[in-house]
Image (cartoon, rainbow, N blue to C red):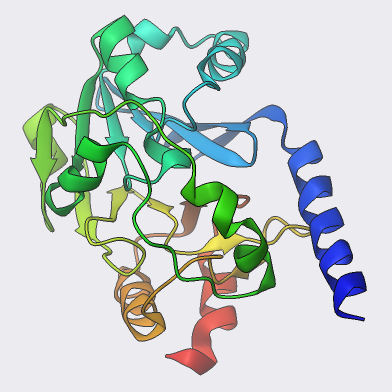
Length: 253
């Protein structure tokens, strides 16, 4: 029975990977357009804020050609990215950072506490929250990416006006010590604070890896306290309506 369950879980993951192998979506909000590019289940978001073009996360190392192809199909030149903000240093979020910095001169922004992981180019320890995480952990821990040094290291409350944009950085250290969320107008780019569902992408769920669930709940609760935010843009699947996040995590907070 356990083997059948594992096979079922793996099939679900494979189906999700197939559906997100390479796609781009654009959402027009009252505060502007968000482009989301998905390669191998990892989301990269691009948003223009006060004339500054921000890219949130960079996907895995080696996936840059597929990502660039999607960006160019949407009319976004990689060289037009002013700042690449890394929500954290895991391989599927920071893997392409060194490439963008080297090839296009993109400025890298990351949490101060994330600098040690970015300097090593591989994931820190992962704490699985379920079977999917347990099954994938060994392969994920073997992944590597070119080390990168942020041009700007940020902490909680960093004002994006310092880079000519609009918004604020919120520390969200429950996934990794230096994880951050990027708050712009009515949007929050939350990295792996939560994720969308594998089948129903708009259904909020606990991330596959989280070492401190109480801290995760505290970070979620803190962000939910910002009533200006209506949409959470996640690192995997999503986006999520804030009301759905409240409903999903109400009992744990």
